[in-house]
Image 1: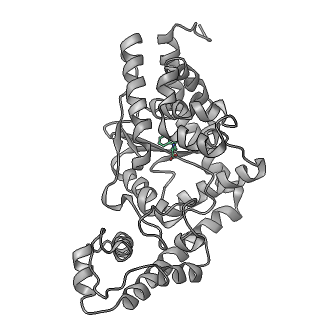
Image 2 (image 1 turned 45 degrees about the vertical axis):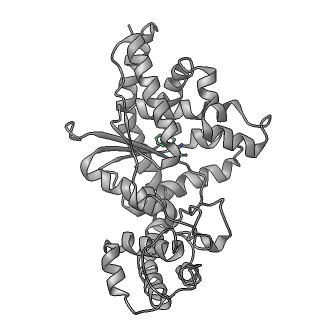
Image 3 (image 1 turned 90 degrees about the horizontal axis):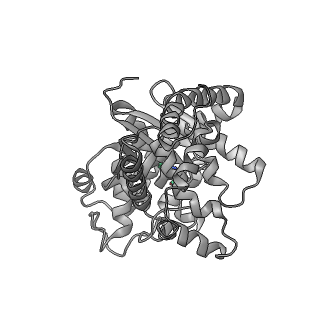
Length: 337
Ligand code: TRP
């Protein structure tokens, strides 16, 4: 892999089951594009997943499911490194070093922890959930990533990564690349179809508001057709006054690569029904092969596991080198003198 390319790393939770349209248009599409410009690493973060209780059989199935969907989306194991986080023990090992560099107060200020632990009841939240962001720091620093493609909600974790990289480098000498966040703006946010003022998310609204990519295409088409809009008739992008129509235009535009002003022109004088019908057809056309490809990977777990084993091997080559350097800087004796 070309060394002159910047490195990118991102982590994907294996807990979602089916990806939804918001995941795909917000993040995954970008992972696919970054294969062309970056030396890209993508990891299914099963170590992070167990910071909240997981059923073992379900976790295993969801890790394969996440990997299968990433491959079906267009991640190419020859052009990027796709692996399962627990297959690369260096993540936990560097995570420990980073734990020892993080202030207790600093970790306490992480808002995602505060939100998640509040949901669970503060005394039931695990120490693992508390140190979750620090493991994420290790994920990123192990690969000397320049860019970390993530959603806006991860900005604070990237800031922590930068702080800890600087702190380690300052204390022990230049070791880690200080990464930059890489947040997609325009297509970053797809909204709920039933409540277009909130982000499309598994936990957010009724199932009718979310397009799951592995659902029967007919079901997804129906959800588009019954998306909440407004009482006007004009098809115009206006996120404030017309959040529902604007969301449909964003989805249409990102799926087809057609600019929104062009769509506004094309639908001038036509009703919401026409937009919804055509968008639902486009969605069905796109989602059908996605489902087929995912099912092919799942039907052949042997091949899938081989792809992941190869990914882990490639990842480990990089991670082991960084870990050895960090261990040495910290003052650990060499294991193999
Ligand atoms: N915390 C990220 C999320 O919830 C997942 C993640 C884990 C991650 N490790 C990462 C993202 C490293 C980017 C880089 O989406």
